[in-house]
Image (cartoon, rainbow, N blue to C red; front, side):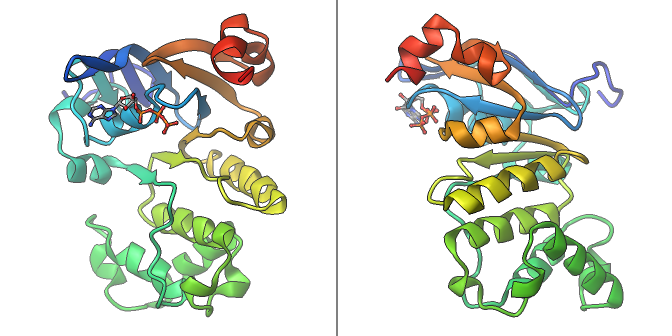
Length: 251
Ligand SMILES: Nc1ncnc2c1ncn2[C@@H]1O[C@H](COP(=O)(O)OP(=O)(O)OP(=O)(O)O)[C@@H](O)[C@H]1O
């Protein structure tokens, strides 16, 4: 398959993941468009992490279809490294920056980790590399912190640095797990703006429990429950759904 057969960037259809008889995902169907940002919410154990694991190749669906880039790539047949190389970046909840390096060196190393055709260009800090580092630091609001040790950044700034390191790989789809967890209110608000800016040029899937943050994102919301989509639409739409209130919001 090398021709686009559908307009969606990500297409999941009837995906189930069964662990020892337990259905972590149960016939999950979901599509994400190009340059779409989607928020995924749902109670603990709803299957959010398992869904991300399927998309990134960490977990194989027991059954179902998972296609990327207009149906060109079958994610169920590829390993994690290949999927990352196709342009799917994942940010886990805990930042994994290199604490003893300064901020710009962290971004530089992420640029060098690129296995693509431009990797050689980044073997030294050429003016082009410096320009790219500057662009990324500007985007993630860390230009003034460029010479600071990453370990000395606030929790929120570390999250932004890690997002910057993912942007170095130019992902088509960015998966972000609970970015607002542990952030101050101001950092949370800034992160919503940052993700909205990022979604102008690529697709973003955000798993989040903080409803104020989800409201700030202002995007379509998918509610997962027991491994399936329970409701989908604007935050106001899903928030008024009785089942959603019962299993999640009304807790
Ligand atoms: N490797 C595994 N083996 C067995 N069960 C698993 C495995 N991974 C996940 N599960 C189970 O699958 C269900 C879905 O888990 P998942 O982590 O995807 O939910 P989640 O929506 O991300 O929850 P949370 O909000 O708590 O992170 C849970 O009941 C979990 O215990």
